[in-house]
Length: 254
Image (tube, rainbow, N blue to C red; front, side, top):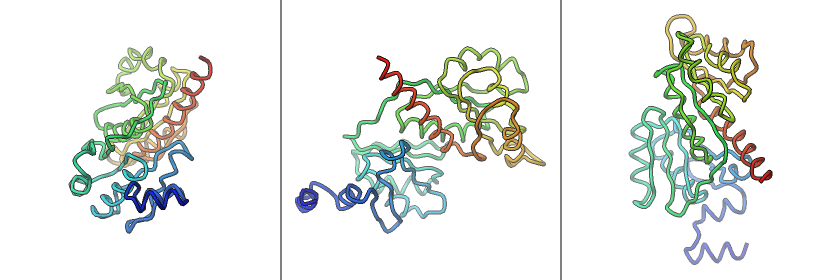
């Protein structure tokens, strides 16, 4: 503890970083940031921007950068992105995905992990891209460069069948689909790898808010897992945990 106090006094360590090392989290005016979650759980702490003010989002992003070296922010608005840009210094890299509504920031000395695993994100159509992009951002932070297999909706089964070899090559699949949500079920029946279904709120009329896709996936005849409507973050984190286990197993077998 004395070393931490001396480092803070010398300006070598911020109070937030010292607190995170002692308690596992850092306290800010916008709430607590769980800096130890990534090491404890294997999933990075994400800052959910929805429901927070831009100033609260930027303050938590700064704390994440100070304590973890990087920040993942989901469901951001343009105002949130602007506030973060004003808050961080010029050496911090900021990657904003407008469609996925994610923001990933990294300090120059941060070294992201790299996992030896193949993850593919599959979409039925362009309308599924927002949830898919959110999942992709989580996987990137966890050390996975995911492959995208897009526009293979079941309206024409040939679009899925001509991608079967790519699907079977993956260690884990995230499959996002709206409307009736049939695509993950079809894919799960064609591969021997874990499939994570993401129901998307695309459609119209009865069940068009994603509830029809969710119900269809929950009733899947083929074995798969399902996350909540538009929950790209949860799907990405789950796939990342599978990828980490695969990567660790491959490392041990070498």
